Amino acid sequence: MKIGFIGLGIMGKPMAKNLIKAGHDLVVCDFKQEAVAELVALGAESAPDGASVARSCSLILTMVPNSPHVRAAALGKGGIIEGAKPGTVLIDMSSIDPVESRSIGAELAKKGIDMIDAPVSGGEPKAIDGTISIMCGGKEELFNQYKPILDVMGGSVVYVGELGAGNVAKLSNQIIVALNIAAVSEAFTLAKKAGVDPEKVFQAIRGGLAGSTVMEAKVPMILNRNFKPGFRVELHIKDLNNALNAGHSLSAPLPLTSQAMEIMQALKSDGLQTEDHCSMVKYYEKMANVVVE
Image (cartoon, rainbow, N blue to C red; front, side, top):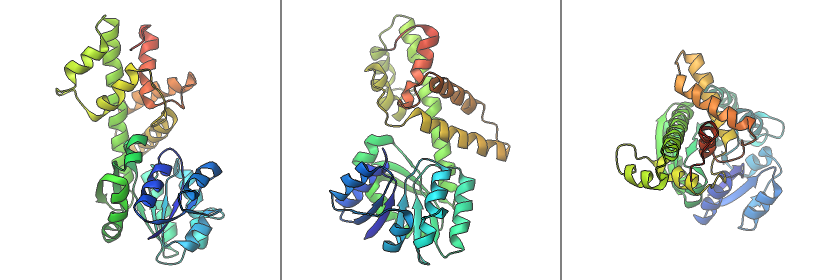
């Protein structure tokens, strides 16, 4: 199938590569020409903007940083809406405000364009090996039609509900991930401060109730002082901001989320916003005057 793909960043590029490996023809677009060139070398076509992508493809995937970027890609000058025919489907795999997903979808619907929100979780390693979790909102019949495409990129592809529901699920995911990393950081800082080997603590507790996917992914990175981003602090700040905005609009208190946000804001103040979100440990290290390694 010929598929448009807009956004070839840390997550988008390996996802697009997996579609090519599965035999799909891609038309790709990104501001970063080196990323575009890498996909073209694998057989993709390049397009200068979303409108050009839409003229070539009836299915378009977007994977961009935040709500304004999705709005620009879909509705802005040179956007998808300018080139798409009625019946075109946009699957937005970005993590954005669910209210904005519904608003963008409503504008596209006026031109006969359907939209699915399908944000992902799992970070770069799972994007590379095609095992990300994908949470989908939109018309269920469209989800069923395009699920085989999503299955190429994801190990778990779940329909959650109407348009916007995918991003509600993603915000819930991001709250849990942030709080898990904060808890891991706090606990292992305690271990180090107490003079106990954090590696041995990890081995002792990983098989019990405290064990988690987050612990398995992030503790080895922390202990090896590897803060190369699988998911950047600044992107998690974006997600928590969307979660807090949604919570405020729904009168849903999110006190722990707000604390995690303040920790990440402190990291940003220290210039660590482009590091992996497991850098949350550095907030605790700074307070405790230890290094968890």
